[in-house]
Amino acid sequence: EGSCYFTIDKGNIYSKMGVSAHPDLTIETPFALWIDIMNDKLDGQRMFMEQAYKVTGDISLMIQLFQKEV
Image (cartoon, rainbow, N blue to C red; front, side, top):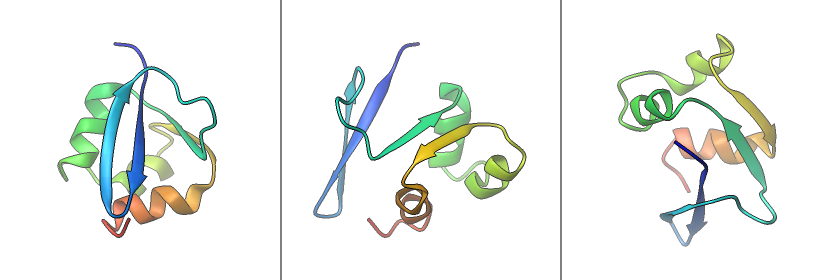
């Protein structure tokens, strides 16, 4: 439970506990759902279209994340 955030730098993704002070993108989702999306057990775009989670900010960053082109 709680909040975590990711920092993407030069193709690497780092995760930290807490809330980013200046997020470019915010994704509100149950943790288990997000883990299944990141492990390719669920389609992230489909889950977004089904409103399984909320996104605010620069949605192009999320698209890049799903394409694994960060």
